[in-house]
Image 1 (cartoon, rainbow, N blue to C red):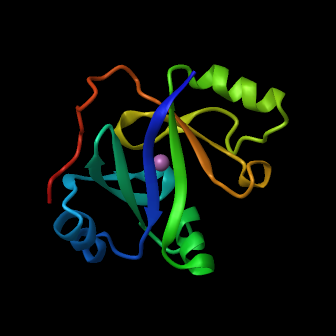
Image 2: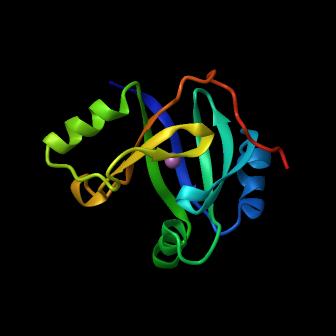
Length: 145
Ligand code: CO
């Protein structure tokens, strides 16, 4: 079951540069940053109710987010939907003819399991399915720098 919006992710050239907007001007609660090697990104978290806004900054020049920035510039990158059983959501998507970007769920930020649906099959919206691994709702293994 899809339960709620988990986060909205925005690709940025520099988290440091954009933190002022989300934390200081919009007043969202900054929850720290985390490196997600699998995705080639540093992620900064800003809490907004039960969801997060996540800023994605590429770690190097050739990851998916770096390529996104080269092609599109900064902007909305993906929408993440929280589910209680990522495997069954993956199965449902595949049965409906929607391609998945990985052959199985991969590691995301916060130790979550994630899978992306192919944007060519979703009206150009990059949708992430995400499932928490059972840690407490607000445990965030991040550094506040
Ligand atoms: Co995400």
